Length: 309
Image (cartoon, rainbow, N blue to C red; front, side):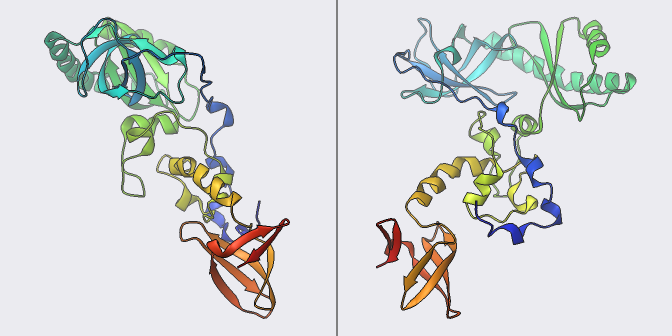
């Protein structure tokens, strides 16, 4: 990796490696080339957590965007919104696909409205009981399953929390199964949503709930200043867009010389000091003191040496 960024590191970014995601948090889907994905196949969304789900139908009529269905989830049977039909599945495993139980009825929709009102009351009760048990927990979201007697409470905390007594307390109040889930900072942002520094909704909330880890190398390869304030999101981790755009930069780098490479041009030896992939301009510093910029299209490789046409 180039040393060109070392001067950009300031006091705010000395612990910049802490912004990276743990590599074990991402497991890319191993697609089965021989598996024939069922059709019609739909992409669904669990609105309370913004999780995406792929689902197939069982002798149900054609579904359209905006319809609501009942499906099995990791927490139990719940309602999901149809985002649309998927014709070319990518990055999913056969085991990721669930079967839709049924289309949500008018009664189901009315029941969910009632549950949403109860969720608001449950948040207040949860906070009161957390305070009573003297626990360090920040409530992120509360959700009642649409087709089961079960309540979910998502929370964040800087430490592991022993909430067994709290679960018993909440169970006696709500008279149903209680499940508490401690989530990380990225999951918190995905659930709550918000606007990023770009002015657009969070990638994890509006685009995809399955993100691969973002590393400092991605920022370096995109020629970004290693300033933690500039390359981290409101969640305190590296920007998701670094991961989305990394493949484009990686491919672009293969076609261009690296920083530090020397070339002979206009009778002088020049050293490449900066590459702007967006504008396709390369900045060079000459031994005679000149600093010039040349379009990347003029560079070509011959016998493992770069030259300017």
